[in-house]
Amino acid sequence: MAKVPTRQLGKNGPQVSALGFGAMGLSAFYGKTASDEERFKVFDRSIELGCTFFDTADLYGDSEELLG
Image (cartoon, rainbow, N blue to C red):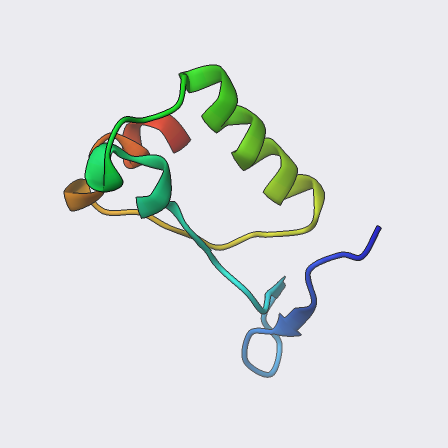
C-alpha cells in the first residue's frame, strides 16, 4: 500500500506528511456524523498511511475533541 509522501520541514526539521487531513468532513458540518468508532477508524487509517498533519478547528464541531 502506498504511503503519504513526506517532506523535510526546513533545513534540519522533521519529516512531515506532504498532505494534511482535513477533519471538517468528520463533523456535523456536512450533516449527520458517523459513530465515533467509525471516525476513529478513519483517523487510524490516515496515521497508518503516514499522515502527520491534521487540520481541525472548533468550527468543525467535535473534531478537535475526537482527535485529542
